[in-house]
Structure formats: C-alpha cells, structure tokens
Image (cartoon, rainbow, N blue to C red):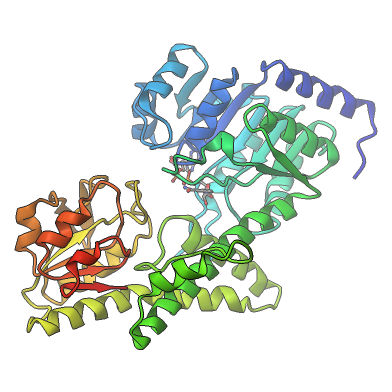
Length: 443
Ligand SMILES: NC(=O)c1ccc[n+]([C@@H]2O[C@H](COP(=O)([O-])OP(=O)(O)OC[C@H]3O[C@@H](n4cnc5c(N)ncnc54)[C@H](O)[C@@H]3O)[C@@H](O)[C@H]2O)c1
C-alpha cells in the first residue's frame, strides 16, 4: 500500500513530531503484567500516559500508587503519578484525547480451547468509538495471525479511518518475562509490523523512545507470527525436555545431569529443563492460537499438538512419582501429608495462571491426601472451590510432611533445609541438594 496523498504527510508528520517531542498523549488499554510496565516505561521517557483498565479494584490500587506487578515497584509508580505523567483510569473517555493507543488486554482460550478474542474486540471497539483522524493504534496482545488486519482494521475503517492516511495501525508483540531481573521492557527488542509503511514507521518511532532496538517487519501478520513462533519454540522444547526426563527415568539416569552436560556445547544447543507441567499465559495458550488458525486453513499443526499432549501429561506423571515414593515408604495417598513447595507457575513471581499446581493439588486432595502448601508469593489458593492458606516452609512443616513436593523453584526457599528435614522429597525442579539422596526423587 502506498502513502502518497497530502493528507498522509500531514497526519503522519504531525504525529511523528508529537512522538519525537514527547508531546503525544498515550493510552495503554489493560494495566496487567504487560500494560503497566509499558505505561511506566513511556511515562519515564516523558510521555503523558493514561493506564486504562476495566477492573475498578486494580485501577483504585494503581491510582493510590500500589503496583501489582513485580517489574514495577510501587515507588516507581508513585514517582510517575507525582510527576503527572501517569494516571490510572477506568474512563474510556481518555481514548478520545489520545494520539496513540496500545492494546494489552488478555487473549485466553475459551472452554473449547479456541481463542477467546472478546477482550481485544471490546478494547478495540472502545478505541474505535473515539477515533479521530491521526491516531496510531497498536495491538500488543498475543493473538492469531491476521487479527490486526482482519479484526481491528474494519472497526476503525467503519469509523471513517483510512489506513496509512489518517489511521495508523500496527502490531507489536509484547515479549516481557515478568519477574526476570535481567530483561525488563527496555532491554527486549521490539518487533513492529504496520499495515502500511507509515503505520510501521510511526509505531517503530514510538517504541524507539523506550527500547534501543526495534526490528521492523513487512506486515502485522509477520509480527503476530513471530511472537507465536517464539512461544511454540519454547513449548516444543519444554515438551522435549519433559519427555526426555520420562525416558531418563526408565534408564535410571538423572535428566538434569545429561542436559547440563549437553549444554556445554558452545553452539547449536540451548538447554530446556523438565518441570511439573506448563503454566502462565503464554506457553500453554499461545501455540493453540496458531493451531486453531491452521485448522481453519485445513492444516493440522502436529508439533504443537504433540507438545501440548506431552506437557499436559506432566502433572499425572508427577502424581505417579509421588505415589511410587509414598508406596516405597508403605504409605498410600489416603491420609498422607503432602507439603507442596511453590504453586506459582514459575520461580520468583506470584502468578498462578494455568499453574500445574492446581491439577496436582486437586488430584492429591481427591485421593485423600492432606495437602498444605508454601509459596512466599501466593498467600492463598482456591482449589476445587476450597480456599487453602499458605503455610511457611519451616522446619516443623517440613518434618511434619510425609512427602515434600517441590513444584516451583522459588529462590526464597531454603533447599538445604528441605534436604535436611524432608522425610521424603519429590523434586520436579532439581533444586534440592544431593544431601537428601535416599529420600529424594527427582523428575
Ligand atoms: N504476562 C506475560 O508474561 C505476557 C508476556 C507477553 C505477552 N503477553 C500477552 O499480553 C496480553 C496481556 O497479558 P497480561 O499478562 O498483561 O494480562 P493481565 O490479565 O495481567 O492484564 C490484562 C488487563 O486488561 C484488563 N482488561 C481486559 N479487558 C479490558 C478492556 N476491554 N478495557 C480495559 N481493560 C481491560 C484487565 O482488567 C487486566 O487488568 C495477552 O495477550 C498476553 O498473551 C503476556
């Protein structure tokens, strides 16, 4: 598509100027793990940012300077509020005054494991309802290829926007890894694909204000697919590590030792490690957005399907390990006291979305085990309609358990103490030291 009319030059140039001078007003829709760090990064760069979220409790907390995201300390949030650069709101009216709108709302799966795109549609409709010529709209939510141009573009065109002339539309996937101290928003290169050259250039110029490296691609679809390919890559490699650990168990070999040995190769190998199953929003969910789209195209995405099967079988495999370990001590599931260490889906954060801990704890309880858990990031957990309160992983708790089951390798746990006091330990993360050998079963 070419950008040749005088109107293009006017709107694009005006917006480019506002971006370059940091006078462009931004609204980030969705103030979760993705949207809040992004909003604060732009505020820190000097932009006026509205953080729009439909969750009143979340907005109330943010407005009073309380952050719920590990990558945004509350002090940083408060500093940006004080400087008048960040404002959390539930009022969609802020969209009318915005020069650029970035959409960071959830993209979960529906009950039948098909994409649930309803949040993206709702946010886009809100933005389109307040469209005026010259706006830049960027979708960041992970989604199926084609969403930006098949779903968003018609909504804005229906409000009179002409893409590349007075409407600028792009997709730029968020690649944040919550809780990762080495890679925060500003450290991760941004991929940007625009519907026209002007769209791409404007979106890229906005991100260059907060990220040193922006990689421009030819279309939104390439950018949408790049994000999915990254997560399929992780999903498939985690599945390989998981299946490899099952195979190693048959062979009486420690899978971790093998993977670490292979990882000494300085090229052509990247280590992935087994675990109790996959959790979080990205890895269990995103690949299914791609396989769904491929099914519509008459193609079966076999790697995705196999990886999904293997990864989803891991909680059952963990239960088998626990059953065998208890059995070796003459104990049935029924009445066994199991202390679970870690219920978040990964280390260092309190995010329990899609965590395999739910399935494992629910199954243990159904079999009659008495389950307690410790997790410094998750004070309480709902399992099968019952609320379980976290305990601390004290010496007494460790000693009292028939089996200590490590599901998340939080750095806060004292693994030497687990090795000392645990009577029987099933370690799905290979964090408990060898000192526990004889009482220790590793995945
Ligand atoms: N969390 C991650 O690690 C991560 C990493 C990369 C990409 N992503 C992707 O980013 C997107 C957002 O994920 P997240 O983890 O930030 O989700 P989240 O659940 O933490 O936050 C989403 C926020 O959007 C709000 N919201 C939903 N619909 C809204 C609407 N119509 N208007 C205003 N607010 C609305 C919700 O109230 C919530 O606060 C998803 O597509 C996800 O796949 C997430």
